[in-house]
Amino acid sequence: MVSDKDVFIIGPGFIGWNVVDLLVAEGYQVTGLVRRKEHAEGIQKSGASTILGSIDDKNLIQEQSAKHSIVIHTATADHLPSVEAVLDGIKQRAKNGEKTIFIHTSGTSVLNDNANGEFKSDKIFYDNKPEEIDALSDNAPHRQIDLAIVRARKELGDAAKLVIMIR
Image (cartoon, rainbow, N blue to C red):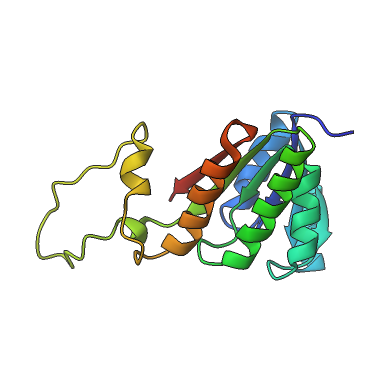
């Protein structure tokens, strides 16, 4: 049975494992995509279930994304096929009238001003002004992945909440 507390996390490693621990402590049912059996055992001891696979397993990611009301991608900011698989799963949910939350961790290099330590930028980005992030250059680092999410956010409208978390 799918509930609003079912989470699929891609990449429960350095960042993601901390997220797993916090979610389990709050009563969420968490499933993590992991590459190695040894890592899966550790995640399971944290109280989450695991699925063995990799970020290249597009069908597996799409299938799991379609089964969960919340999807969190912490594996990498630079793997478009895995993000496309998540978005495909979310679109499948939307066609079935199911809402989804998707949180993708991107990298701060997308905000690079090319100062290289030579000057201080006056630009400040604010959480409540996502249009400033959305308007960044198409060739900024991580940008192709972020743009895929922005396009899907526009396409899906209220059927999903898609967030890019810059870390």
